[in-house]
Image (cartoon, rainbow, N blue to C red; front, side):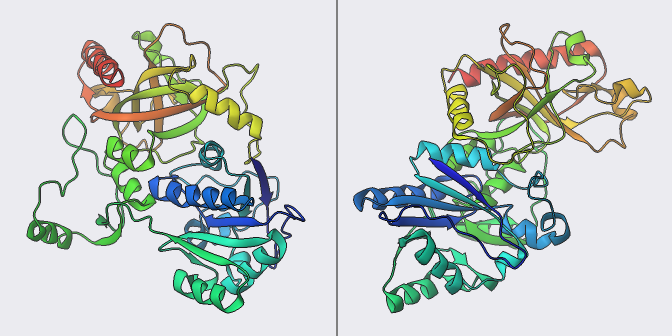
Length: 425
């Protein structure tokens, strides 16, 4: 798989690469945030058609997400060519995570377009004309609700008419809706489950009348069941198992391991702490069962760099490390939550697995959420500076305040045993 990173100029124009003078291209276009089952269905069809016609399979992917650029133009539309794209906390997956899936699906070329407002102003007719003329596009594969170009005017009906009128490319529409539509709150607000155990779908067991009454009781919108929005809502409610079913794999976040204050080590449960820049949507606060994977296990130093696009070699190494039987993958009890604030500056980065009543009382103003994990192994090495992946399998319980350190240790011991049982399944 060849990955090409392109940034439009100030006028939104792109210098598209020439992939081949002889072979044509079958293209699909989108953000593909989450790489859920609907996305995979569209991409698989793209690869299938390309192979049948001895053409290149090409995925054009936008980064950052168009919606976040339009909502925050000053933040996302003015950064240098070599700078890291600002963190999008609502994105389900990073470019690196999406590229891994595309490589597994045997895509030939991935073109990552640095989405900008000037680029967004181009009409879908102009955009598709460029793909035909520059990339040699002879087939375009889209999901049934896709929309391209300025004001999203290029829906599948408009593109179908253009394809028929010009005769230079074919449009293939993939029905990627999955099990149908669902309603989700609008806006999505994280809500911590009140009880232990994997949260249920609030609409589960309702008849049509009850579902209508429930949906009318909250501001909501209709989305596809297989959609990034639905997955985001699930994660905002701790439903990581349901989210994983739509994603086709456990939901993942990634980041660089940093030093904490060592409080977990002091009580016998040392945790791996992620730094402030976390790739992937962080689920709602709570304690989870899952896994931790060291992506830099065979590196002298961590691979954190300002480059947003990893090499194919890095992607292959990631795939090896993320494998089910990887020696760099361990079951883990995972905590997502808010760090307490201490008067002692040295403790400001303290572990946040849980904390006592006295510590909670002194931390009410704290706002920085942390992600950390206790690995169920005695083989783990020093991970400071390494890039790690944390996978979420099940929600165990909401975070709690404890009256003593002994109660805290007992609770973590139970979390560990639950984790061991769940991941063994």
